Length: 518
Image (cartoon, rainbow, N blue to C red; front, side, top):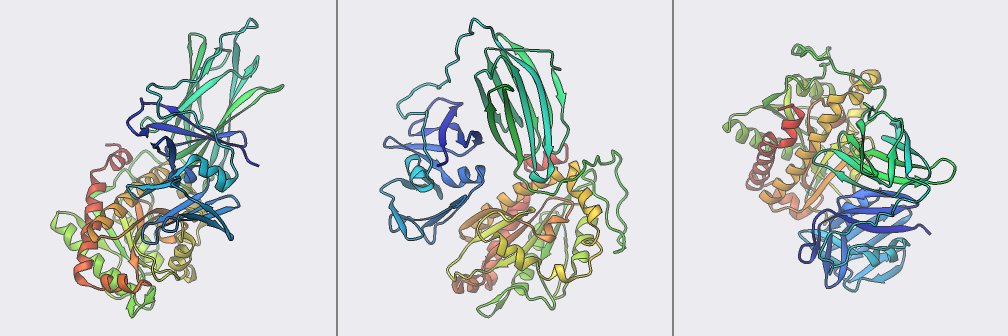
C-alpha cells in the first residue's frame, strides 16, 4: 500500500472556515508541493481535488451538468456521483456521506475519503481550532555538532522534463522546511541545525527549468534558494545512510520536447518573407501587441465534425468573422487563416500566423463527444501528451487532416527540435496557458456555457506556432440543444464577445508583459 501523508505548511493565519495553506503530499517517500486549497467545514478538512490530482500526476474532471466527478490516479479510477451520493469503481460503491462538497464550481474531497478511494494512509497537520501559524519543531544541536552541507549537484533529465537538485551532507540529513513562492519563482529551503561547507554560494544551472541555486549562512541554519523558470511541479525527498542527501525534482508542467539548449540571437530578426518556401525564424523581440491571428478550423473539403445537421467549418468561420469585427472596432489588426469556405494547409496556416508576429493566435473549433449530453467550452494549449478528459480524442480529430499533408514544416524535425528547446518558446508556452485560462472564463460567462477548463494535447496547429496560442472548442455539435445554439447568429455573437474580451484581457495581462519584457 502506498503511504500518502497529507500536511499543510501554513503561510497565513487561519481564516474562518478555511485553511490558507500550501499543501504537501508525501507518496512513497517523495513530497509534492501543491497549491490545492484546503477548506474546513464542521470540523472536516477538504481539499480541492482537481488541483491536487493534477499536481501528483492524476486526473480529475467535474461535470456540473452530470453532477459527477471523475478521478483517476495510477490504477485507481472513481466516479463520484454527487446526485446519488456514492463513489463507484468497477461495481464497488462507497457512500459519500457528506465527504464531498462543491463550492465555486470546484469539488472538494474530505481527506479521509481520499484514503478510502486510493488506499492511501493520510495524516493532517492543520486543525480548525488552531489560531496561529504552525511550525515544525527544530531540534537543538547535538553534542556531535551540526550537520554540514558539503555539496550541491544537479542533473537534467530532458526526456522526463525534470531537473534534480541534490544537497549532500556530512553528519546526517538535518531537519529542513521548504516552501514554493510562485510569485518569485523560487523554492526556499531552510536546513536547520546545519552549517555550510566549502560550497560556492551561487551555482548556475541554466537549463530549461532552473536558473541558479544560491546558498546563505544563517545562525545555525543554511538557506538554499532554487530559482526556477516556467510552470513547474516540485517534489522532494531525502535519503539517509552512508550518503545522506536531500533532493528536489522540478518537473515542467508545460510539456514540450527538449533537446540541447538553444540560445536565441540577441539581435532582432528581419521580418520574414511572405514566400511559403521560407519558414519564419522565431523571435519574441518584435511581437506586435496590436496584431491578432484567428484560425477558423477546417474548411473547404474538410468539414470538421458534422452532427445534428450542422458542420463545424461553417460555424467556426462565422464566429471568427464576428470576433474580427469586434476587435477591429477596438483598434486591433486581425488576420484570419481563411476568410471563406477554403481549406488552408498546415503550412499555409503556419506561415501566415508566424509571419504576422501576433501577440496571440486563437484556433476556433467545435467539439464532439460520444455522450450527447456533453456540453461546454474547453480550451487547449499544446503539449507532447494529452492531459484532461477527452484531450486524446480532440487531438486525434483535429490532427487527422494535417498529418496526411506533405508539409515542409512538419518534415523538418531538426528545426522543430530547436524551436521547442529555445528559451523564448518555453516562455511563450507559459503565456499560452494564461490566454487559455482567460478564454474559457470569458466565453463561459458571455455565452452561459459550462467551463470545462484548460487542457493539454499534442495539437499540430499549436505545437508549431511561435507565439502565444490556444485552441478553443466553443461547444459540442454532438449535443442537439447546444448544436442549435451554436448555429444561431445571436449565440455566435455571445461567443465572439467572450473570445474578444479574453484577447483584450490577455493584452493587458502581467503574463504577456513579462513575456515581452515590459
